[in-house]
Structure formats: C-alpha cells, structure tokens
Image (cartoon, rainbow, N blue to C red; front, top):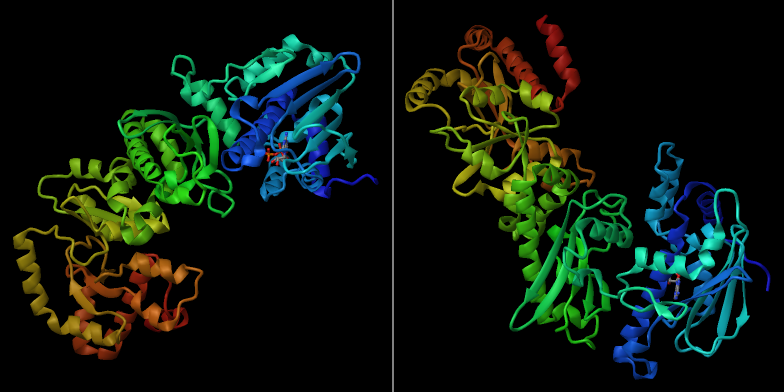
Amino acid sequence: MAKKEFQAESKRLLDLFINSIYTNKESFLREVISNSTDAIDKLCYKALTDESVEMSRDDFKISIATDPKARTLTISDNGIGMTKEELETNLGTIAKSGSLSFKRNLMEQEDIEPDIIGQFGVGFYSCFLVGKRVTVVSRAFGSDEAWQWQSEGADGFEITPAERAEVGTDVTIDLRDNTDDENYDRYYQEAILKLLVRKYSDYIRWPIYVGEYVSNSRIPIWQRTKQEMPDEDCYAYYRDVWHDTKDPVSVLRVDAEGSSFSFRAMLFIPSQVPYEFYTPAYKPGLRLYSSGVLIKEDCAELIPDYFRFVRGVVDSPDLSLNISREALQHDRQLKLIASSLEKKIKAELTRLMNREPEKYDTFYKAFGRQLKYGVMANYGINKDKVKDLLMFYSHNQNKNITLEQYVADMKEGQKHIYYVSADSLAVINGLPQTKYVLSHGYDVLCLTESVDEFVISMLGKFGDRELRSVNNGELDIESKEEKEELEQLSEKNEGVLNFVKEALNGKIVEARLSRKLEGSPCCISARGPVSLEMERHFAASLTPLNEEEVGRIRAERVLEFNPDHPVFGKLCVATVNDKELAEKYCKILYGGALVEAGFQLEDPSEFMKLVCELM
Ligand code: ADP
C-alpha cells in the first residue's frame, strides 16, 4: 500500500514539535497511557450495556513490554481498538480541530516557553520524541480483522493488514539512536519505566503492568486525601487533562456522604479563559464516573451555565450504570449532585473573594464576564445566585469591589448605589454628573464593559438599594431646601425651558434646571427605562435593528441646565431679544452635551455651520 502523507499542516507542526520545541521527552509515556485509558474506558462503558463485549472490569489492563535487543518498547491495551479508517483519521491528522491555528500562532511567538506545547495534547505524536519509528497494531471491537499503522515521522504513514488475536491496540516504538544529550536506552529499562508510570500515571484506574508488575497504585486522584495528593499534584492533573497552561486558582474536593446518595468530586476553577471558551468548540461540563468507570466526558448537566468555566470530575457509586447517556439529563441523582456542587462552587468563590482576593481578582478578570452573562441569561432567572459574586470598579477605592462592599461603605443619608457607564474612565471622570455625586462624598461605580449596563438594569436593585446611573435625571441627592429652591427657579424659567424643548423639536422630552452641573453649562440625561448607555450599546451593536426596534431602545433625553452658568443667562436673554439666535444656542448646547457624554453628533455638518455662524 502506498505511503500516505500527513495533512500538510500536521506535517509542519510535527516537524517543529519533534525537532525543536518540546523538551520533556519522557512525557510520551503519559500520553500513550492516557490514550489507552480512554480506549479501555470506552470498551468498559460498552460492556455495561452490550453483552457481546464479554469482558468484566477486572479483565482490563495496560501492559508495557520491552525488547532491549531490538531497542523497542510496546504499550498494549485491551480497549476498544481502532478500525482501519479510524487509524487513518485519528492518527493521520494531527490536531484535528480549530486548535491547530491557535497552536501555530503560539509557536510563531518568540518568547514562548517550550513546555507550553506539551499542554495541548499533541498526544500520540509525542511517541516521535523518543521513537524513530512508531508502529500501531489495532483491532477494533466488533471487527475480526486487525490493521497496522506505521510511520517514521513527518514524511507520512502506511496502513497494512495485520494480525491480533484480541480486541485492543499495541503501540510499538523503535527508539532513536543515542546522542550526546539523550540516552534513549533508558526507555527500554523496566526500572525506569516503572518510575515514569508512577510519576505520571499513578492515578490511572486500570492496572499498568511493566513486565510482570503492576506499577501504578490505581487510586483515582479524587479518591485520595489532601495529604496523599497535595494541591500541586491536583493542579498538574488538571493541566494535563484539560490542556491548560496555567494552574487553576483553586481545587475543590467534595466528599458527600448522604443517606440517599453519595459522591466524590474534584473541581477546578481555572485562572485563564480557554481559547475556545466563547466558541461552540468549548464543551462545558464535568467528567462523570460511576465507581471509577467513565460514563460521560463532558456532563454539562452537572454545572449551571453561569459556572460553565468549572472543570473537574464527579464519581458516584449510586448512579445506575446502564443508564443511557440521553437519560442522564433526567436523572434525579444527577440533579441532586448538580445542586450540591453549585452551592459548593459558590461558597468557594465567595471564600476566595473574602480570603484570597488576589486569586479572586485573577479569576474575575478571566470569568467575570461569564458571571455577568449569568445574570442576564433567561431573563435574569439566576440573577440572585450570581449577584454577590459580581464586582465593579470603585471610583473612590480605585479597585473592583462588590455591591455589598459598596453598600457597607455608603455615607449616612446616601439613598442609592450610584454608577456611571461609559467607554473609558477618562469620559467618566470628565462628566459633571460624576463630579457632582462624588462631591457629596458618595462613591461611584465605573462600568466600562458594554454588558455592565444591562447587568445593572437586570439587577435593578441590590437589597433595598436602587442602582442609579449618574445620568439619571433624578439623583435624589439634593436636600429638601435645595429641591424647593430649584422648583421655584424652574417655575420662574418655565418659558425658557419650554422654548428649548420646542427649539429642539422632538429631540428631547424635557429641558430642566439642575444643581449637579457645577462649572458646566448643561448636560444630557435620560428619563425612563432606556438609559443613554443602552442606547449607545444598541447603536453600536452589529445586529441591524429595524426601525421599530430602534425607536424602542432610544433613551428619552433630557437637557439639564445650570441656572448659575453665564451661558444660561445668555440663553434667557436671547429667548426674549432674538429668538432665531436663541434657537441656534439650543442646538449648539444640545450637540455639545451629546459629545461630552460620549455620543456622536446627529448632524455634524449642521453643528459646524452653527458654530461658524455664531462666530
Ligand atoms: P487525543 O487523545 O488528544 O484525542 P491523540 O493524538 O493522543 O489525541 O490521539 C488521537 C486519537 O487516536 C484518539 O482520540 C483516539 O481516538 C485514537 N487513539 C489513540 N490511541 C488509541 C488507543 N490506544 N486505542 C484506541 N484509540 C486510540
């Protein structure tokens, strides 16, 4: 049979991988063993529901045999095996998924740490780190023929008919010739192989024989105590299984012994966003085992969507083993486990927030947005479960704080939680409204992510405190006297205010006086349910909206004037003496206020024309 080439991209990657970047050669053994484990898991699961498998749990094993004369080692398993087609597709395409371009980008960066590559499960190909030739003989479950796949590295592979008495797979590696730097003879020495198995694969639940001896202790990682398995070892397991380059911020061990059901779990809270997190390629969920048998790899039913970043394993002896994967969704036990895990995760995040704020900060930078989506999803049905975990940037404290912390630090007499949302802190700090609220000694939460505004409006309140934008026309800050004084002043200026509203011809719903403007002449604010920020967000959104929708999400604008500012005085005079001029003033002030609030002018050339005329 003619030699087949690896796919072009695979070839390049394989070259790079074998010849330069990867340094930790001995990890090939872990990769091959991990593939064998998966293959056995698959057949073992099948055995639960399919009588034709004729195997029991005790029959499964992985064996490593060596041949010092031939300088080879062979890793065998009696797992599910591969058909001819599977040999070709599974071993012929390196990095099948979209992860390839990611890896390539990664490798183009110069300052990359060599070991990072090992984190991406280049898996089977790591055999070439130590092997000059790799031969795989496999017989798939349900098939009575076996096939051999053979390759000497980047130039391709050959598939030929083979013999194998039982279902399963042998991976034989012809070791490379020794060099000055590397003694490849190590890898056919049983003593060394035993050490490597213990080092990398001790927790694998299937027995791993090196020669005659079982080398691994076979106790799954989550069945061990913290003394036996310190956090660092769990982190290494996490990085390995979920292909992360960084340690998680936390590992959570759960041992639930109940009268109706019991389970153990080991959960990880990652510290960085997986690159495919916001794509369909990301499969949320936990690995579900029943007494050590893998039932489902990504059991999404175990984790609420707002915690979909959590990784880990759950093992329960109480799950009925021959339950179909579809029926899992409705399983009562599973629901109980999920609800218990949800509480544990929330408790752990709260603990991090209070006790290890730096770690929480790392976590929040990575997944804060996911929590915010959690508030928004399904019309806010879960908002109360997530709201305490949210953080926003505090103007006064120069760091992220929770809503609870904001309320705890509120000044006496302060009624609401104030926030302002804009594209940048510079815009926020420049707003007279912000300054006004701050001048009362009140803190302001600065929201700079576009989702923030929606999260806030979904929350509406925190406890009995209203969340109020500084752009809201009613800030509720003034004293009773100040309010009365302003009311009287407004009555006196009713004519001018009405004039402004008419001059702007439908652009605003109201013109009013305000005390919040300090040194500025006027500002834009909003009335009603749609805020200025939301309007801006929708205007910038990529989804084209129809006219009716645009109308619905337009903020009701209010133009507020500072009665003490000379500009207002000039406007008043003009409304009496020169109505045409007064109209121009109104349009210019409205445009200027829009720009200051971070909006675009509705008609920039008209604005420019007006400025020129006035000059
Ligand atoms: P990964 O394990 O990350 O998917 P690998 O390159 O290690 O990537 O393996 C590719 C695929 O080849 C596996 O997903 C599996 O389907 C198949 N495979 C590898 N080794 C075995 C084995 N011993 N038995 C059955 N299938 C295997």
